[in-house]
Length: 452
Ligand SMILES: NC(=O)c1ccc[n+]([C@@H]2O[C@H](COP(=O)([O-])OP(=O)(O)OC[C@H]3O[C@@H](n4cnc5c(N)ncnc54)[C@H](OP(=O)(O)O)[C@@H]3O)[C@@H](O)[C@H]2O)c1
Image (tube, rainbow, N blue to C red):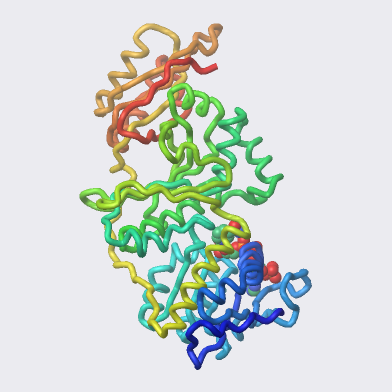
């Protein structure tokens, strides 16, 4: 490996001429981080005051071609964690174990840790952060949410004086690629997914992305940081995008909305409501124009007002950039002899059920095309405190006397809306509620044209 030039002009800690790093995992993110450390090594060394040296890299498969010198690689990951020459561990394996075990051992062994592991941080982050804080070590995980977008550090530092009222974001690139394709080209979900898989934007098994698990982990992490309280992923309501059809996307369009998979976390009077689900978003909302591989999070703080952070939410280079940013932060801290700045979350957050959600709803019903249908639907909804705000109707199949109506409701409690839907199909009026979704935005957007 090429040696980093000496930087004599900067003040130097005589005990520390170099900071030694052990990497666990060298896949997509690991190689991105390594490449950045190599390509920008002089500038990075200047910013820290001493160079960074990658001293060992743990992997599984010794036969794979690698972009780092062969002698750095080992399959003995424990040896890296226990190596007395290693100051910082970067964990880029993913999953709960062995990653979780190794991070815990590293922290118990006096090593600072940087990780991109969203599942681990979402599920066990509170314990690991507490362990880091107890041992006066850093545990950074900027890359776990939003790839290259700075989100966690701004929430922990620049925005820390605010009470966060609400955060809302597009935090999964795969689903955003699929929904963008469906919106812009009128594709159905299965076709858009197949294309995303062919282009490498979706995994062969897309469950984690399209069913919302990935976004659920990320919203659990963001909510925990934003509200300073541990929010388990199990407390984040989750729905994916499989059920979205091009018909719903077309109706959203004519009504003035676009459909996005949003993660939303908000502080209500009696607790925190966190959720991930497809949402009708007004076309003029800042998040509505975040398309394709881009991610963005929109944060409302009591003093700062609205802040939106956006960028590439995944991929080797953007995620590698976030890992290296965390590493530089850790190295600066080591250089000045500072204690770690892990900020433990408080336990015992009160979280709310999705039933407590208050929002507008969209629903699409297949109905018998006959008198009193509208009145019957409005009465049934009204019995559950749900009132209609807008509708669009068209004849579906004249031979069967079927019509299709889409409705937007006024804001109402989700529990009431669900009860109203369950009570809807009195035989001969509503044949089927074909789909329904939550609608974002306090005021109604209704554009006047008709869906094709
Ligand atoms: N990819 C992204 O765009 C992205 C974005 C944000 C966050 N992340 C997170 O970053 C982390 C890494 O993701 P990635 O995409 O880089 O994964 P990846 O490409 O699958 O790489 C995983 C690496 O870990 C090694 N590994 C896995 N299990 C191991 C074991 N039991 N023992 C030793 N080595 C093991 C693999 O070794 P071999 O090379 O020998 O197979 C590989 O080098 C995950 O937590 C992921 O959620 C990824």
